[in-house]
Length: 545
Image (cartoon, rainbow, N blue to C red; front, side, top):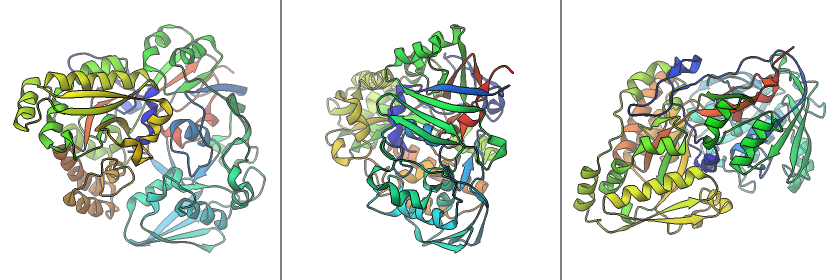
């Protein structure tokens, strides 16, 4: 779910609307009633030769390069090439071995990870079990303040049980903990570097010492970050094709598009949807759409106000003109979302997707029925406050659409402007949400398991921003999270999906694919959301030999 990345609305708000066939390159037709056709593919054409360097555009400067605090697109896009996890999410949304060459589960509450031998950190030292234990335990330490801390809620102990073996003991079965070893919670860094870095770790003043294909070279705060090739990288399949990567930070969407067209940036993820047509027709490169696991949603923040009545939540959902929202906010590239967790979040058990997600009904659009529900709830004329921000045009589009929908059915929807910095605070500071009823989010998974999304709706979870609570949901979640078989777990997750759709703590809006622009001189980049953890820069090279 990871809704703090709602600030990624700066670009094409992302979610996968593709079939399994589309993930291999098939064209996805437009939704009924309009919208642009698009193709979803996990990879761009492979590189044909090496590069001395390439420049990559980020829509904002990373606020940290500390793996335990990285909770947004810019820092994770950089760190994906510098630091690695015990497991790895591949571009086609599978989970494979990473720094752990294998794992075992002798009983439902014990996980044993066998580490890959001979892995070198960027300073030349060799990774050991001590580094893994220190890295994972740091996520659990309240002093770290990691937003990933809740991933370790069921962990009783993390122990070194051999030079290259780490054993995790759980208080109760937790399938998601293991899967999240492929995301930030499973990151491994040098224990010595953590001790040496102190408060400067992950800042422009500090150093990083990880195992990825690139090492941090320089961080010129406010200007750029450069990475250099790690000559002793363990994975020969991902030996970097470029000696150096330079990241530049461009917040303005128009300026970012101009950087792509002028060639001052060779590429970038999360392309501004307002620039899709220009980039497609500009002849300066290729705009690609890749697999994603998320959807743009409305998160309910206050159940004591107008939206505390389920009839009002249902009415607001029915009043949203999703197809026009997609045209205005996502460049026409997307489909109405059927559920809070998008279709792409079901990639771990794709054989179940058709039955468990595709059979869901399209979201209803019925102004008359919605107005009647508001009247039945006695809510006519009552106020709903939604956050809006200049952070991205898409935020304004969606918030204005919510305001228009509310007015049509008898609700007073007030837009509360929030500065770009303050907008991200809405997802980490409960006090920042005071007085708000709704916030626009991107609900997505770090792994291709829909259960990950629905964990954030459990009672008391960090990502449950409105403190919604449903006992049936909590029981169903625990049952699903103890099921090791992906197919059976998907069936159990479908019950969580049903409860969420019945109760609407999250109102689904639309899904759109991940996006990447590649200038004429570069190719090889993964196109989908796996770029947040997969070492994507290593695969980028020259289009010509």
